[in-house]
Amino acid sequence: MTLAKATWGSGAPLVLLHGFTGAGSAFDHLRETLGACFRVTAPDLPGHGNSPEATGWDDALRALRDALPAQPFFLAGYSMGARLALAFALRHPGRVRTLVLESGSPGIEDPAERERRRAEDDRLAAFALREGVAAFVARWEEHPTLSGLRDLPTPLAIAVRERRLRSSAAGLASALRHLGAGAQPSLWDELPGLRVPTLLLAGERDVKFSDIARGMAGRIPGARLRLLSGCGHSPHLEAPARYAEVVSGFVTQSEGERT
Image (cartoon, rainbow, N blue to C red):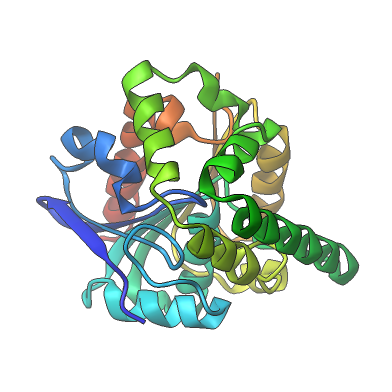
């Protein structure tokens, strides 16, 4: 599987992994800030944008291995992209210099709960295929987790919605079935072995993922936790200037400590 990707900016290599219903272009509003410091690679994850449909969790990790820069890079992921970023860093630690997980999770620990989530994701996938992208996006945007996006500036809100509507029903269904939290193996037990400098980032108003970030911080050696005030599930959209400042600052500090 070959992933579509965009590259922009100049400087040290930074990879950005988007969330569900997004694409590599989900970070275009950060080109002026992050692009001044980093050479950004932003792939379309499987089932999204111009990349092929998702076929499996391990297949996605192999596709990222082949698509991302060969030299060690900084890695930041959001939501679904954060889950994949964490798995990639655990599997290929030598390729990741620092790791930023925004509203991420190591997966669902309890097998019964994970199976319930898999069934829920499968029902959502069937809805997307049956009703089409527009109906699916309208339903998805009502999810309480995404309530923080309702106050975005109009141009950014329009860009987010148009990006979602450009998705294909088959692509989103494949991502739900193969990359959703129900399909992801639990990585909680692997967290103590993560040796990549890690920042756990969440919005203070996102109670669920703030709690998950705290739990991860207790298991990842040396991990740092940052909860952004006034933000919900998507700080990179809700507070893009602060997000860029936090990511750049963490990378700079971690590189200085490494030296």
